[in-house]
Length: 191
Image (cartoon, one colour):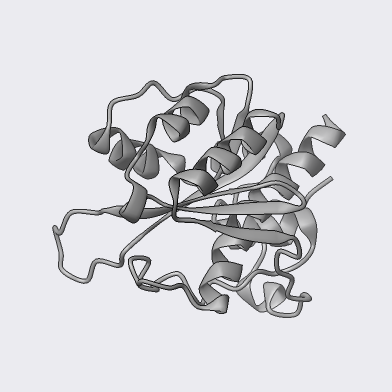
């Protein structure tokens, strides 16, 4: 049904797409309450995390931003400002809300060092897509194989602790979580 892997040259020929819904930067308690209330009523959401880039070998990774997205809404949770609050821990521990991401092992390890919690309901696309014969495991390649378009990774090394995000940063962060949502949606409709 899906090809096993894809070359970068082939990805570059695909149409580039980005998230087209509402993006909310969550940098206050009120916005966090609204975001978690919305997420608690979703069966699943795309998930990602961004850290300030490290350019020194052995330096500690520090997650600054959590992204959650559905088909129409994306929440960029500034944990560099808000910390890892109970609301978010509640989402992380709720097995009824499926959180779909890619390469979750490092993110979960780093987040659990910030605050102890028991993750539940997470689906890592790098593992899940193996059931469909897909061997490539970068999010960019999985997106191309499953959804048939390409995403930009140009903002990956951005400073995620800036006072204000650029529009490009917001769109990049929302898109990464959104494609996880869309990939999962498509794959579960096949199963």
